[in-house]
Image 1 (tube, rainbow, N blue to C red):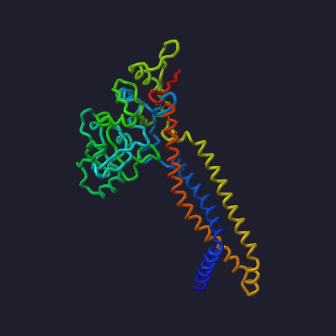
Image 2: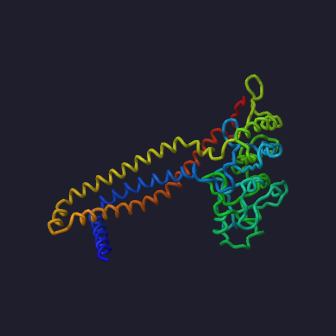
Image 3: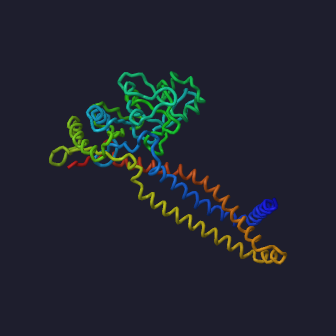
Length: 399
C-alpha cells in the first residue's frame, strides 16, 4: 500500500512539474505526438493496402481486368460482351469506378449525401457476400426494365433506420429516383476498393435508366450499348479453382480479340490501320492504390526519421530540464532521499509525458489516416483521369 501511495505522490509531483514548465511540456508532448501519429497513420494505411484481406470470400482468387495501359476502366459495351462471351473466370462483376460518387437520399426536406456504387447483378455473388438482412442484388435485378432496387450498408441501416427490420420493401429516394430496399450488407463489407466506403448499392441498369452518367460527365449523353465511349466501369473476375493469373491472361488474350473485333474501331494509326486493344488480369491487391507504393515506402522512411527525431528532441529536452534541476536533486539527496527514489521520480515524469504524447498521437493518427486515404484516393482518381482523358483513353498495342 505504501508503494501505491508513493507512486501516486510521484505522479502528482510529475504533473506539478509539467505545469510549472508548460512551454517545455508542450514542446515535448507535441514532438512525441507528431512522431507517433505520423508513424501509426502511415503503417495503418500500409497494413490496409498490403496485409489486410478484403472482406470477401477467397480474396486471393480475385483479379481485376485491366486494359493494355494498366487501367481498370471499361465501357458498357465492353462489359456486356465480356460478360456474355467470357469463359476465363468462374464469375465476373462490374461496378462504376468513381471513388467519390455521391447521391442525395431521403425525402426532399431531409436529404443528405452518401457515397454509393452502381454494380452488376453478379457483384455480390462473385464476391461471396450475403445480406445480414434481406437479400443482395442478383442478375435478374440488373436487366432492362427491372424494378429499381438497392442494398444499403450496415452503417446506413443503423444511422437512418435505427436497425429497424421493417425496412424491406420500403422505398428510398436517390437523386429523386425511388429505389426499393431489398437488403442490408454485412457490417465489415466495403467493396473491393480500400478507402471507399459505399453506403448504397444499385444495379447498373438503373444508372442507364436514370441517366446519372450525365451527373459525372458534365451533362454528356449516356452512351448506347454499342458505343465504346464512357469508360467508367471496373471489371473484376474470380479465378476458376486451380487456375493461375498466367492462365487467365492467356484466355484474356483470345477473348480480347473477339470482344474488340465486335466493337467499332476507335483509334487508327497514321497508316490507317486500327490500333489493337488487349485485356490482362492482375491480382486485385496490386491495383491503382499500390501504384503509389514507392511513395508509401518513402513516407515510411520519413515517418521513421520523424519518430527518431521526436525521441531525440524529447531526450534533449528532458536532459536540459534535468540539468536545471541539479540543485533540487542535490537538496533532496541531502535530505535523505535515495537515488532509486529520485530515479523513480524522474522516470514517472517521463512516463507521464509519454502517455500524454501517445494519446495525442493516437488522435493525430486517426485524423492522419483519414487524410492519407483521402489523398491517395484523389491521387488514384487523378492518375485514372489522366489516362482516360475527357472523352477517350489511350490504347496500346498487344503485340
